Length: 246
Length: 213
Image: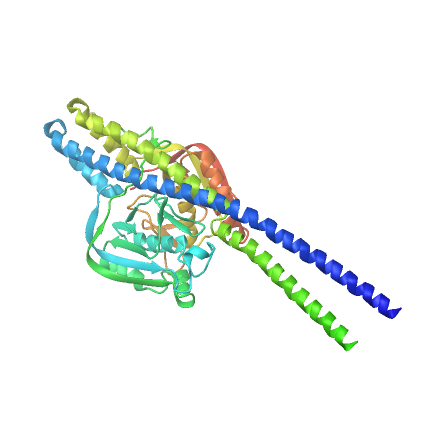
């Protein structure tokens, strides 16, 4: 009698286990289909689209640079029809707003992900990765030290440059930039280095350099070139105020 | 009898291993997908695509504008007008004239540390702001850079900023407002991080920002 009860319990255990295993096997095979055909395909389409937009962006930015150069050349060739003071004023303004490349002494700052991190395989909040906020803080520090011109990986940084991240992707002027990040700064070397050497200037970054081994270094350079801004300056909403003399 | 007990134990162990193996396999299967997608989570990927799309549209508009400028520059009669228009535009960008337009005003009555200033302003530029000021100091290449003084005060262009802080941005007021107040956006982050945060965002038809002194 006891043996029959025992047998019944064992059989029930095996039935339940079998059903459970069957469910898992089914789930496994069922999950394999969408995993390969839906999320990955969608992911690939998204990545292809991003690549396509990024490629287009590079072409558009090159075209903008070429057009600005052609306009510049035409204006200089126009000679008498354009008064020299207009050209001088325009040159000065272009320097101020980043539409002219800038040469001079300054510093190169390098930021790189921790050797323990793999940017491609981690989430955006990974503490071992250089974050957009790190770049913003360094750029802000340099501008507060009266930097004349700043670029990140050859993307000219101007006042209106957004430095943001989407997932693990860092965008400067809405353009992808990849580590290592080189921040080129032209300005008074003494001022720039004083700020960079001050351990209280970038407290959050200092902590992560110490704890997470984010790589941060800088070196003074006698001759740097910061390239021209290659983005857009569309003014759709802002205009000179009514009180401004025309 | 002893043989049967061993057989049952063995069966249960094997079943358990099989079960565990399948559970792990299943979890990893989903995990692989999730890791792959979470790296650029759905929302982030779409956000990235949207940013790139808008950027390329703006770059295309800029090209159209520059092509017009090139045509004028090539025409002796229009060249002077074209260069004067360009000077006028560049003066607006450089902060050499007072400007106006629709936009938003973000007011924070609490004391803020330096990072919030760079982050708030960055979010405004990201959302397409065309001119930004903090406590009516226009941000340009010559003035940008928030300096944290040893006593914790924030200085901008040689002026110490004091609360309430007014961040004015000229641009598409709806886009700016939505970007700043979105879930996980700067307004929420300030509310989450600053105790008793007193923060308001107003859409305005007309914002005026003074030129850089």
